[in-house]
Length: 414
Ligand SMILES: *[C@@H]1O[C@H](CO)[C@@H](O)[C@H](O)[C@H]1NC(C)=O
Ligand SMILES: *[C@@H]1O[C@H](CO)[C@@H](O)[C@H](O)[C@H]1NC(C)=O
Image 1: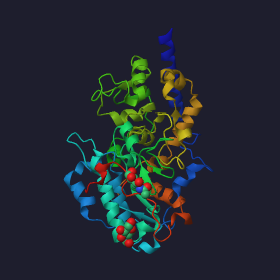
Image 2: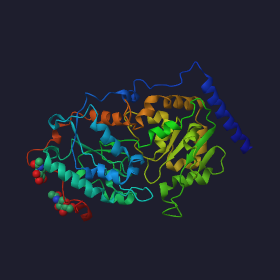
Image 3: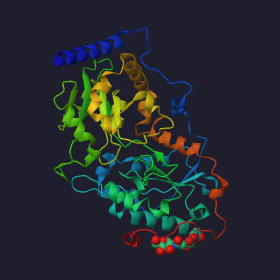
Image 4: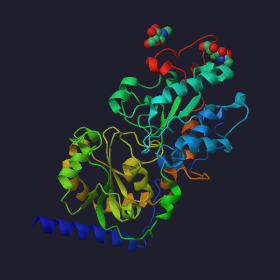
């Protein structure tokens, strides 16, 4: 009886998708007009001017030379944003006319042999760079950093630790308290996300993703797809804490369910499989975000976001509620019922919205840059914060930041 019901559901969804492809009278993509979706096409040129500090190579280029793997890492936005700004028309060489100041520093490009970034030196490196800009130019002292932005793409942003409890204990580096942080980490009511930060997608390699594109009308014959870890086998064989238990719950409840194509194996057809799937699970891991969010949007697979209180990339421009499905962590055991009860018309609408190229562009950092890509969305986000409130400019001699706050280890020279 139960098996019959599953089969029926699979057949129903596959036919719905085929029907969707054949229904020529319907638009294949859909725009959300009159809502936030429209600002994705804004052109930032003319709306802000950015001054790029010139720093010694040891803060950026030399670090990359030591480990070119940083160019393909999910934290590579810190490098590509620098390159992009150097030749962007929003760049000004005259700091007196700048709206924003940018410090090109690659704090995340310090990888272990297995490729995991270790942010232990980042606080000292960041302090060193801020010391340098604040003594060489007068602009930092004018606002104590309030008109400066930094790209800090590590797991928990400027908290600079890969374990959440330690990251919370550290908090955002005191010297960055007034700056605007452009970061991948986003979770509401969390000490590692300051009000006013800009949440960005993690870096996913655009050329590689493009090389794996399959025809858009390929039927989506997989109902739910996920590849990744369910338990943190490296650190804790019990794995209970990992992903606050959400991934373990996915595995335990659905490993034998024929609608769920889930496994820890990472096949070579991973990108193709996402293009053959209706729903792609994006459960939290160590951090609430992962490259799966980007991959799902780019490959038109409806992202199923399981990460309570997540703040999604460019949430003021991308209608996440309309393109994705949000499932509370506690509701994972009902995931099958939640997903099978979404009506075919709702699924088709989400797929049409996802087919809109502006959503995909906003998720990627292509080289060279393209209008509407993630670089442009960052600039749009910075432009929307202008003009700066007059109150950010300090009185002569006024200081707000505390240069000696924070763990003593962070005070050592870099
Ligand atoms: C900024 O203020 C610090 C003291 O907090 C001072 O050492 C530094 O020289 C000032 N920078 C400039 C450019 O005057
Ligand atoms: C700066 O921070 C240090 C270390 O937490 C603290 O001892 C000191 O009182 C603080 N200074 C000010 C002016 O708040």
